[in-house]
Every structure is written in C-alpha cells, then in structure tokens.
Length: 405
Image (cartoon, rainbow, N blue to C red; front, side, top):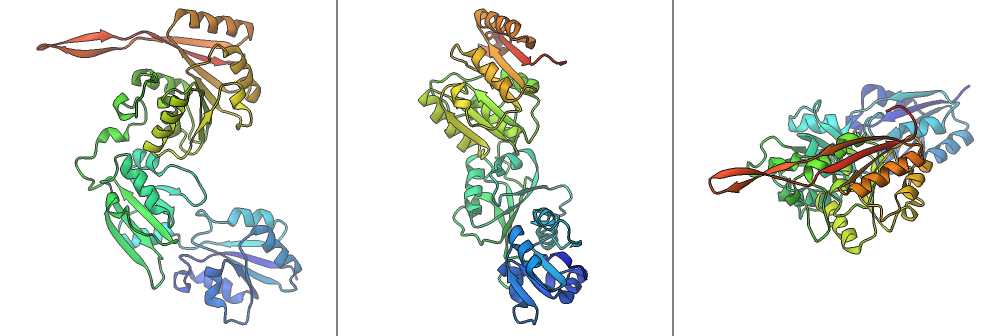
C-alpha cells in the first residue's frame, strides 16, 4: 500500500476550530506529526505521535515508518503563511492531500465584526517588512505578529500613526483568548502573547493625525530629520521615483544617499524588497539611519562606505539611484551593469560639467540615455502678495544598457 499524507490546516489550534474534513483526516490517520501546540490535544490517543515541524525531518519520519496514513498538522489555513509549500517540496513523490483550515484572519474578523476582504495582509513572523509602510498605504491592515507587537506599535506612533484604531487578538480560540481595542498609542507598554494578531484601521482615527503621513512620494522636507547634509528636493524626488518605476519586491541601491530622503521613498515603494543606502560621510550615515527608524522602514539598510567597493557582497540590484559618485561614476556604472545588465540607473545633476561627464561616459560605455530637465518655482509671501522663487534646474538622467527604452 502507498503511504497517504494529509496536510491538515488546524485553524487556531484547538480541536473546536477544525473543519469537519480536517477532523476526519486526523481521526483516520495512524501517525500525527506537527508542532507541540497542535499535537498536544491528541497526546492521549493511541496514534503514533511525532512533535516536529521541519519539512526534511518530517520526510524522514514518514520514510522510516511502516504505517500508511499520516496527518501533518499545520496552524491556521494551509494557504495562509503556512509551511505547506515547504512540506509539498520535501514530500515530493508521495500522494498528498491538502486540507484547508480556518485562518486567524477570518476567525478574528468574525470575532470583531469587521470584514477583511479589503484588508492588506502582512506577516512579521521571521520577516523584516515594514508595518508603518503598510499602514501608510492602506486604510485597513491585518498583521500576524507576536510578543514583539509593542515594538511595531511604537514605530507606528513615532511615525505619526498613534491615533489609528486598533484591534488586538491574543490566544485565539483558546480559553485564554483575549480581544482588546483602542488606539495604537494605548498599547505601547502592553506585554503581548506569542499568539497575537492585529487589525489597524484608519477609520475612526483621531482627527489630528496628519494626512500627509500617508504620502510616499515627494515627502515634504520638514518631515525628515535634518542636518548639514544636502537633501534632494521633494519635487525632484517625485520625478526620480517615476523614472525608477520600482516594484514592491525590488532590490535597490541609493548611492551617495545623503540624508536618505530618496532611500526612504524607495523603501516605501519597494516595501517587500530591500534598499541599500550607500554613503561614506559619517554624519550622513547617522542621518539615514535616524530617518529609516523615524519612518519605521525595516527594509532600508545603511552601507557605510564608498561605491563601487561598498557594493561588494550586496544582492544584485533591480534599479539604482546615484545622487553622488565622488568622481567615480564610470566605475560605479560598470559595477552596476556587471551585477545586473538589465537594470535601470537614474542620476541627478545640477552642474553642466556633471551632465557633460555623464554624456561622455554613456558614449564610451555605449549606454542608452534619456535626460529631462526639471526647474521648480515655489511661492513666497511678499507683503500681501505672493511671488514665485525659482530653484536651480536639475537634470534627471536615466541610463540603461544598449536595449530599447
């Protein structure tokens, strides 16, 4: 007889949150395998019990067993941040049936009476994604977290979202189940359970929350922590970001990152990717880190050093912005296109000599180039009148390997 394996989603973990099909598969199984929390309710049964959640070890257990019917227990739903795909790959060759379960999202939403079809879903278990960016971009966010939830709520409050509505679910379905609600800032000192989920809402938010906090492009200068390091103007950043056209999973370099204003907007756009802010000035390095912390960006890493040497060992980029090159532009471009020949690089320049240098390098390296000039004028009060004050024109240059734009 061939061995039959069922991957069973166990809902919140208690037998009462199992589906009927999941319960039947567990009853039919001769061997139960799973983490201790899910296995514990069956410890007095006559079945063979294995406390294990690692895919390769589970394959060994099944491979050495003389039994035919196995149930591998997984928390929540098999398609919702579970170990299902790892197990399917490890158990390739065996007949596998996947039994879905009730997810913490659907269970919690039913408990608090809030629909979840329009929620942005995020897991922070073993992931360095930014809850702040998710809340900034979405009016309803569901997040799987744990006992470190207070740290994430502190980052939200620091970034200006302390007045957002918050629902907290701990130990869902267990006798110790606790559901709380209030504002984000109300729970900064709370100790959270390991089994914890959050629903964060802009609905019913304090009226004094600055709606500009939701801006991800062209963030006003006054929102950043400033020093003596030059900063790319908001309007220029907006054009640079449109030229970069980042995807949420991109790996991006910001070379000569300055205060990190472009790095911050990159990290918000590539919120499930990674941004490396490369900078050699110590004051600037410290400013970038402060701004990354202030905006709650877990996917922004500061690289202290000078390009191209500082790029060694970093993952290959999908795109890059060069705000400063220290006279090493040709070496930097050569390095970038070696790392990824199909990537896109965006530069900005103020001096005509820099533009000439870029043109010369692109010709020598046979690179395709597209250039726009942006000149911004801003209002200033002059008595009871308002006048426009012009800023320096900026050249924004997009560079690619010889292929069609």
